[in-house]
Length: 360
Image 1 (cartoon, rainbow, N blue to C red):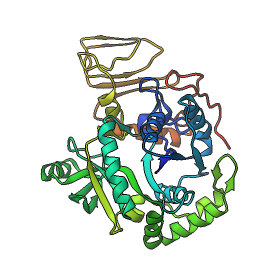
Image 2 (cartoon, one colour; image 1 turned 90 degrees about the vertical axis):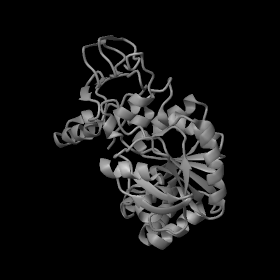
Image 3 (tube, rainbow, N blue to C red; image 1 turned 180 degrees about the vertical axis):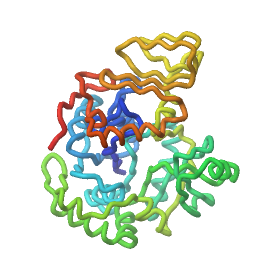
Image 4 (tube, rainbow, N blue to C red; image 1 turned 135 degrees about the horizontal axis):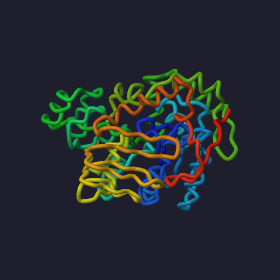
């Protein structure tokens, strides 16, 4: 089995610690490990090799972080993102058609690795029978930021868009709906056959781009060839149309780390619910997320705040408003402010990389 690690995102909802050229998956917020490193380590005991899909700007960060944990992988470099269906198609073309692929985002967290291993065993068996397998996370609350999968055992009835809170609560009460994790397992052959059936232009243009790719230390797709591939997600292009889809209900301690609220849930906290960050002081304050490291951060009589301090930007937000952070990034882009893109500073405690200018 080969682990396909999708690692090209920018993580705008975790700004300012996540930037376009230094996204959240490379931030070392978990006992000196990044989400990218934890993803690789979590899967290497189950997979024979890894293929990492990323871009040129993140390529060397990924290499350095693999080196830190004594790991190696193959790389597929996209000059521009075209969403997950083309990315997975290109990776599937790199392996033997019968190879089982475990497709995982690089920026998710799984806390119960024993349960995760058990789910992988079932997924691999179903994938070997020709099914396209997705992991459905048993929901813990009516989350409105995730898509849902309606299931009948392992059979998928339907995929649902992100619901409003009332609809999400109805899904929870019904008991056969699961969060759509974005983790997949299938053979390269099965995926490519279904892609060719339901999204033939994506299949053909991906095949052409792969055949024309440069190959040195990595497989490098040409910009014009990449732009010729229609942009679409694996969900829309294949999973919602195929009759060969199975879902595995999973309770694995999963989070997509898609907001500061998600990060707050998994970080260590003191008895008052404040994250245990170094160089902080709290007076009659509780349930606050604090990320800083360098400057002293002191709070007095506040609760449910998210305070994220870097040397070049400070974010203060109310918990529950984390999804709005991406609007700040959008505003920075509109104003042509490079703070959305790079750290305008030297060494940061959560990473060891300095990007002085955007690559041409």
